[in-house]
Length: 209
Ligand code: TMP
Image (cartoon, rainbow, N blue to C red; front, side, top):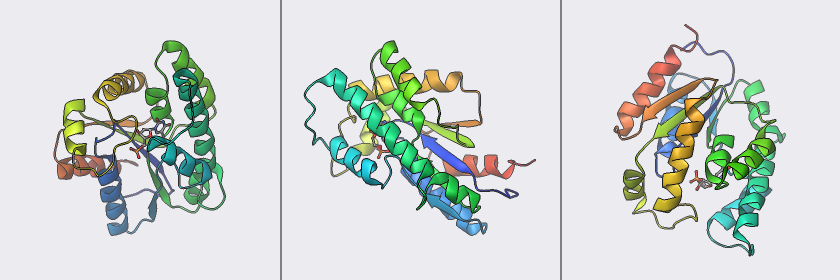
């Protein structure tokens, strides 16, 4: 594999699409071929990311649902800025040290999850417009019914993990990625995890060809 710089690779998909499993398999692959990588999810492990995780777990004091969506969008954007630019383990610092960064989720998730109307979408787009596209986005597309079945055995649920929400989120993702002008790999995530992983490896192996 001939990749000579640290890449910023993002997995996207509805909850339950298998991003965390694939991120781990990709990291194992990089280790096997002698390349350094870290898994660095969003929300991040920084201060705003931690706050977001408590909200996602259902604990929050917001009282107005519409304002809540906007305030969450601001927090996700602030956390994203930290994720990219902090100088402890920020994405671009790691990339500059030739370390690949594998992120589960990026601004595509804000566009897909944090708003209901076209107006909300435009607002979230503006909040996120200065963030650079990743080197590659891998979109794991899965029917919501199957994603929910896969999540059935998880010990706790997060606020967005409902059928109604995820059906809208999947629709949004498909619109966003239909017109996405940068590098993207779209994968049918109904496939088994080894097949999906192999598709990703095959793609990366042709990176510089
Ligand atoms: P996770 O399931 O990948 O841990 O993500 C946590 C939840 O956060 C997931 O339901 C999607 C949601 N989310 C947003 O709503 N907006 C965002 O910008 C991000 C990064 C995640």
